[in-house]
Length: 280
Image 1 (spheres, rainbow, N blue to C red):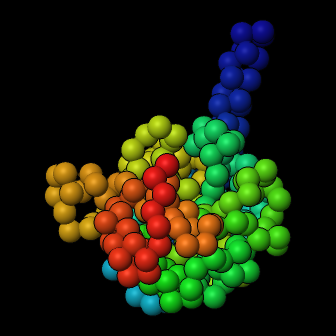
Image 2 (image 1 turned 180 degrees about the horizontal axis):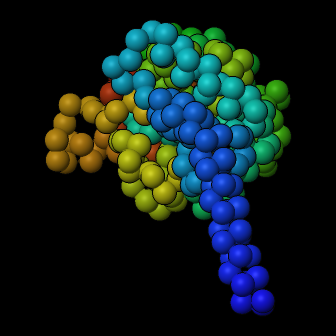
């Protein structure tokens, strides 16, 4: 009797598990097809699903798709998320300047020291004046921005105190990228930005090069390989990122990081605007 009961129980258990599996497959099949069609798994800000970010391509896409990517990326940012975006130099990771959560996540995912500041990105030159105390003529500022240059000034009073706390200066960027600038406009807030790589690793020119960060990101915007027309050594030089120049003192400048636009920046500041270079 016991043996017969055990056998029946075994088959009943197997049948129940098989039925449950079929129900799960039936309920999930439509959703999985939809996810494949979208090209990735959905993400919730601050979470990691299967270790994968939502990867959205803007390479060779139509205007409708581009607008959809802008909407989804800006929604992730407004929700306190962190995203990866191509700039005019290298790939970067960004959050809203106003998001304490996003700023903290950037430092955590990169293993970045807290004393290393984040730059902020705006969409138009006029917006620089709100977030920094500008000490140079507007024509000079417009000659540097948009472009592969980070301008450093004394920080303005409206900046989030959690961004680079205790530091009197702030770097401002306007990448020469229509997608990036439209994203800032759509967010209605500047972005805090740094390079998309682990600290002490090389800067990245494609999304595959920072795949180890995907599980910590909400959206990865894939703009293809960022190319500056060079090969070999020239390509490696493009990984230097933007040229960072301190313009916080009237009548002088100093180069904090040479970057990829060093010679053009120095020539403009020294030869055309007659600023004195201070070597640090």
